[in-house]
Image (cartoon, rainbow, N blue to C red):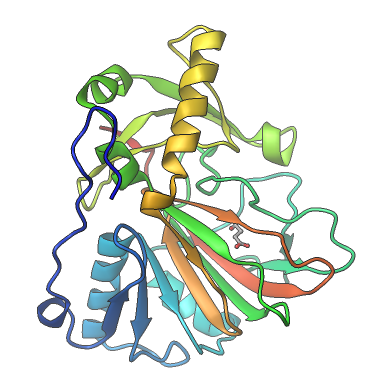
Length: 288
Ligand code: SIN
């Protein structure tokens, strides 16, 4: 159990899954983030109850995992569209590539890859004025001897583990999220609060990340650098993160408002390949 230097132990949620979910099976993947959803076929239209329960699980667990779903673009778009309008990547120079469908991006890496997308902890395109609400990655091809896992961290649990003094210090501060650092000139740069309130769960989380956050606006550079370094390390702690092991035809669907993720490139020259869609955000992060 992790006990922060000045804080209380971090407790796992007490959830009565049998009572809460009737049309799908929901199995927690780790104490603070992630659940595997079974008893569902994403190649078919879902019932209203299934849609409502998947939405509830998404808010509860921050990232949902699905196995053995051999979906095509139409299936992925239909399923993701239950969560909002699908949007397009705001990056100018991206490693992931477009497909013939403007809503679907190809995430493909092989022996010719010199980089992969998302190797540092981040929340997708936090540089956008309205960052994407969620992202859904489907991988159909995985390296033969494992590898290519994705890690996910709960920014709620990271926030809750901070001392009260640190929480009050961060409250009201804002940070610059500079997309040009990752995706080059012409990509958006935005200011967002450091502590944010999730619009649906109302829980508080930390909203800065290694990839996009350049500085805390209200502090001199040396103080900003030190606080950000602490926060990045803190958010990525093992105690509130999980490591998803992909199988062929798995899906990971994460909430960018309260989860960060990072892709692990340990499989070169093998192939890992799939497709991602993103659900558009309709608002800027809300100050917490
Ligand atoms: C990303 O969306 O940042 C990439 C995630 C992955 O490929 O595992």
